[in-house]
Amino acid sequence: MANAFNTITVDGVTYNADAYAATQKTETKKNNELGQDAFLQLLVAQLKNQDPLDPQDNSSYIAELAQFSSLEQMTNVASHLEDLNKLVGNIDTSVLVGQLSGMIGKNIDWVETINEADAEGNPTSHQEAMTGVVSGVVLIEGNPNIVVTAEDGEKYQVDIANISHVYEAAQE
Image 1 (cartoon, rainbow, N blue to C red):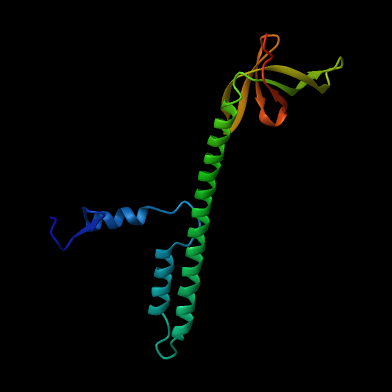
Image 2 (cartoon, rainbow, N blue to C red):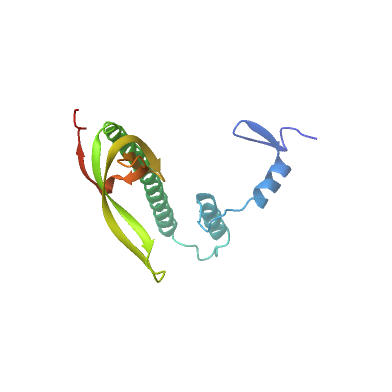
């Protein structure tokens, strides 16, 4: 029977205390990191089990807590920097896609690497200069590429690093 003495409220949800404790014991961390709760549990266990006739100096506990706090803050900063790096990368990609879309309708020259096999079946490659008109921009695995319709009517996805020249189409 649930009453105020055998329930627990977590994030606004009330649970049976025994059932909640059982679920917490079965949940395990998927990594080997020492979390804040585990650290504090170890510290409390260390305090409980110390020799009462020869207790440890409090300054060592304070030093451990300070080190753990510093480590936790550095971990948080590293995590936030990683998130910020992803955000900046997404902004850079968006800006680049916007700039590349301004190339639609313009002529470009680019270098296409052709991979083939020689007469003996050994792989070879050579580079060929190509010309075409930009018809679109696509993202391939997060990297912007342009879609070009070559002079022969075939469409190519061109990495922007392979572009050698961009120019206006000749007026006829």
